[in-house]
Every structure is written in structure tokens, then in C-alpha cells.
Image (tube, rainbow, N blue to C red; front, side, top):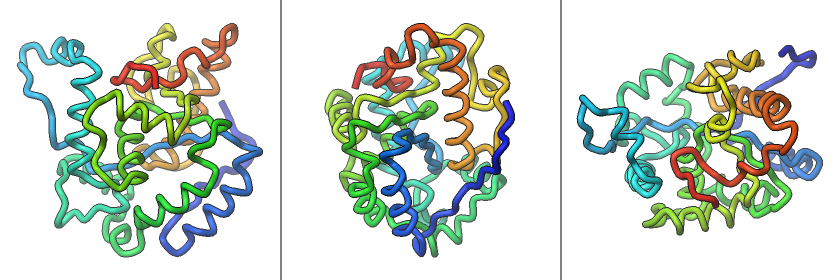
Amino acid sequence: MEYSKEIVIREVWSCNLESEFELIRELIDEFPYISMDTEFPGVVFRPPVDPANNRNYFRQLKPSDHYRILKSNVDALNLIQGFDVERDAHAPDSIELLRRQGIDFGRNREEGVDSARFAELIMSSGLVCNGSVSWVTFHSAYDFGYLVKILTRRDLPSGLVEFLRVLRVFFGNKIYDVKHMMRFCNSLFGGLDRVARTLDVNRAVGKCHQAGSDSLLTWHAFQKMRDVFFVKDGPEQHAGVLYGLEVLC
């Protein structure tokens, strides 16, 4: 899949946050589709596993088990924009990976977006609490977990049912997790880059593990999946389900 028009990833820092949200407010009614990805400092809490039976163990975890692990990590960690590598808990291998992909932790600390200000502006942007908006994501339970944490300014709800209720309040029912949708597509498996290659979808701009580039690749993969695998019934039947938390929002 080739793209004829030049695509530009817009960098957003504290200095231009308000003007970028103003642009979003002007466009959201005409273009009510949002592809979203976040970058965060890895996973520091994992369940105890038997190395000899690792794969089967994870398959046996219930959605409530996955959520409990997710909550432990999201409560303890911050998104990259609010992250201090010298102070905050993190997974060192994840930090090194993000550094190799061009994430400037020093600049993020000095010029990054304040999460409280972000929450204030996104609430008036038309992106959330708007039933007309669709969210397109890939393996996004953690992404939404961090967004809920930012929007509520508190730890995640204690249980999965309450988390999904809050998720529905902010983001509605039109949430598409490509990783979940892959379960209903023959020949699709693996991570985002592998799925894109299988679908013959190219990364239009940027590098992997950069939120803007990964979001765009997720959107293009979703479009291709919709046109190939969901022509008859549409993808709507799989909306509102996050991979790993397979309970309808």
C-alpha cells in the first residue's frame, strides 16, 4: 500500500499543546476517527510463572487476572511525558529500546506535556465523551489504562468491571483493538509490524516504538483488515473489546 500525499507527524510539546488541541477541535466532527498509541517505561510487575509452562500459563489467565497485573503497573508507572528516568520505576530494557528509537527523555522532562494540563484540554477537545468518535488501537489495554489514570487523576479502579465502565464513559463503545480483531482473521498473528507486513501495509513515516508512527500504521492496518476480512459484516461486531480483557466495554 502506497501513500501519494506527504504525511507529517506533528511534534507536540508543552509550548504548542493548546494550539494543537485547538486544531483537533476544528477537525474532529469531520474526521471522527482516532488512532492512538502510548509509550510507557515497560512492565515492572509480572505474575509468577513456571518457565517450563510459560505459554500455557498466560493462556490460562482470566481477563480479571490480566487487569490486576495491568493495574499494578499503571498505578506505579508514568507515561513517557511524565517520566523521570533517574527517579521513577521502569523496566531498563524498555527504556533502552525507546532511547534507540529516538525518545529524548531529557527533553521530555524539560519540555514534555504536563498530564494534568493534557487531561484538561482533552476533556474539551471533542475526543472524549463523544459517541460519534471511533478509537482504533493495537493491544491497547495499557494505553487506555494510562489515559484513564490521567483523566481521573487517581489509581485505576480496583476491578475490571468498574474499569470498563469508566472506559466506556470516556471513550464510548466504538473502540477497535486490532490485536483482538486478529483472532477473527485467518493468517494474522504477531505484533504490529508483522501484521502490517502480512497485510502489505507499509509504515508511512517514522519508526517503530514512536507513538505517532505506530498509531498511523495501526490505522492503515485496520483499514486493510476492514476491507479484506470484514467486508460482509463490518468490524463493528468486534468493537468495545480490548485484547487480554475480553469483556465487552
